[in-house]
Image (cartoon, rainbow, N blue to C red):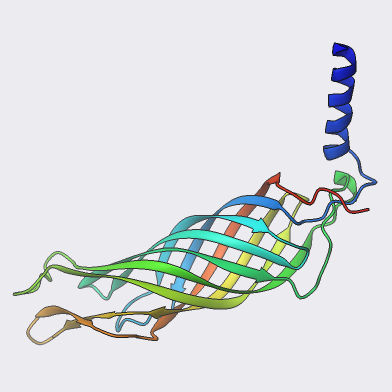
Length: 225
């Protein structure tokens, strides 16, 4: 009986991972990845280009629809008198207009390819702006912070280098929905102040993200004949 159980287990494993004549749908695929982000055209006056790092996981629901769940840590300078830190945590839906089915194939049969997509999503973010050394406000707090939410949309593409590994490049515009912090600096007097404006603000920035992703597990939708 033990021998029969062993043969059955090996056969089952071969069916899931070793067969090349069975097609695997991409639905249910879970990926993990790391990412780096550049923030351009920032909404804050005199803010310079921001850079950051983060992580993400993807969960795919069909041939045409994937999802990204991400975290970003981004820092930037406001000229030489203040420093800004942003934390983003959110999700995006990825739609593939060119529907190419994913198959697990033998390594020799796989050809690297681009897979373009359209994305849209939502995130929650925390921002903090701090005065740099030597530019402390004469009165008032040394920093200002806010919590808000944002929506984002853009375009991107995967460069699939193997059946399980891809490099992805995304460009998206993020619009913040919430209070807005302004840093006012008088170059004549050297006075620095932080001001928070209540109410909705549609200020935003362009994010360019490069990520490395690896498919680690298939949660459902194993085969399609």
